[in-house]
Length: 70
Image (tube, rainbow, N blue to C red; front, side, top):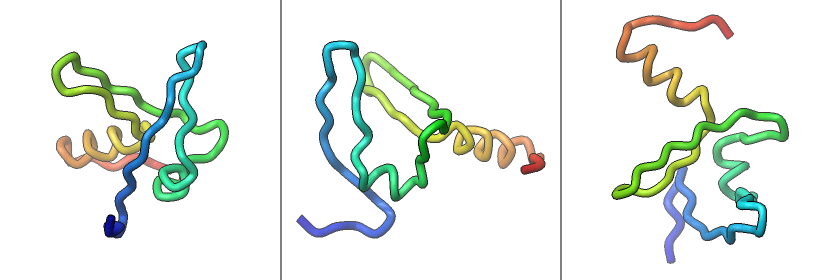
């Protein structure tokens, strides 16, 4: 399978406590570090998505025409 630049696909297994491990390739791609806050979105028909919380804030700011201080 050819790798696409800026993308990652992989599988994870859910542990007994409902936890998953985010694969190293995905963590590196999104610069996810220990202690980061992630946003989990779930929809019964469309599935689940996990992203860094700042991604949603950036999209919100783009829609509203605002900018946040870092």
